[in-house]
Length: 163
Image (cartoon, rainbow, N blue to C red; front, side):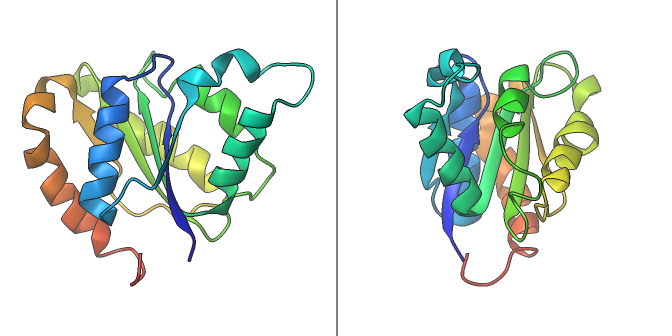
């Protein structure tokens, strides 16, 4: 299958989103694998010439067997930073790969954003996306394990053996 890659679309380095993503990957997959934190790549995403660090990150994502994709919720959806990065992938770049979408949000009114916005983006890139995506309210971060455990159990049943 391939490796596990955790992609964090928060523009701030060391974010709560990164913590949630790593802990969710560990809960569902046993490891976060390689963590690609886009905060450090943000200044290079629109560079006129290819930047080695961005190309390495894109290759990691394309080669992942399982991709955990996490973002804070901005304006009811994922960040522009995550979108700008994923837009650099060619069509069907994630074909045959499994992707686990995660959004961290301030209010329950955004809970469907993980299914309505992030899932379709990953599917458009060809990913197989088990149900449900993970919507984490900031108010639940102190008790994250109680959110992750049932989600991980549900998702694990939809992933191929050996992941």
